[in-house]
Length: 251
Ligand SMILES: *Cc1c(COP(=O)(O)O)cnc(C)c1O
Image (cartoon, rainbow, N blue to C red; front, side, top):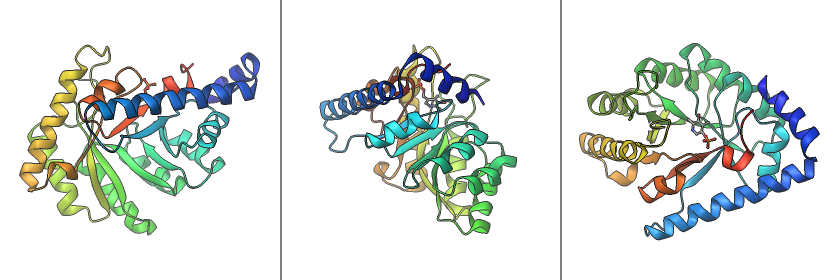
C-alpha cells in the first residue's frame, strides 16, 4: 500500500516526535480557523472536523488522536480495514471514498466502528448497506448523499435536483438501518467554482427538506477541504474534511 511508502519517508526525513508535533500544531491551527470562521457567521457550534488520513501511516493518525482528534476519514476500503484495528476503538470513522456495492460487506465487517458513509450515490448501494447493517446486527449507519455539484462526468454523486431528492427519500422510506445525516459534495478540482458548488449543495438541501417536510436544520452539509474549508464554513458547512493541511502533502 502507498502509505507504507509515506511511513518510510517520515522516518528518514523527520523524527517521529517531530512529525507528531507538526501534526498536533496543524490540527490545532485548523480547529482555530474553523472556530473563528463559525463565529464570524454567528454559528454557535463549530463544524465537525474529519481528519482525512488516506495514504498516511497509523503513527500519524495516532498523533492526531493523541492531540484530541476523534473523527477520521479514509477513502480506500482495503486501507481503512488494515488501519482501523491498529487504532483506538473510540475513533469515529467516516468513509469518504467511492464505494462499490461489492465492497460493502468487507467495509462493514472490517470496520466495526464505522460511523458514517459520506458517499452514498445510488439506491443499489443504499439497499446493500441497509441489508448488511441488518445482517451484521450493527447500529444504524449514518449516510450523506453525495451530490455532483460541479457537473463533471468523472465525479461520483447524484445530480442536484430530482435525483438527489429521490435518493434521500429512498433512504428515509426504504432503509430503516440507515440514517440520513445530510448531503456531501467535493466541487470543482481547481477551487474556482467552489462557492457556486457549495451554493448548489445548499439549494439541494432546501429542495430535499421541502420535499420531505423537514426543517433544514435536520440535514447537515459536508463540504470544505484543505483549500476551502474556511469559505465552506462561512457558507454553512457543518462537516469539513481536511487532509493535507493536517497531515502534510500526500506522496
Ligand atoms: C482527500 C479528500 C479530502 C481531503 O483533501 P485535502 O485537500 O487533503 O484536505 C476531502 N474529501 C474527500 C472526498 C477526499 O477524497
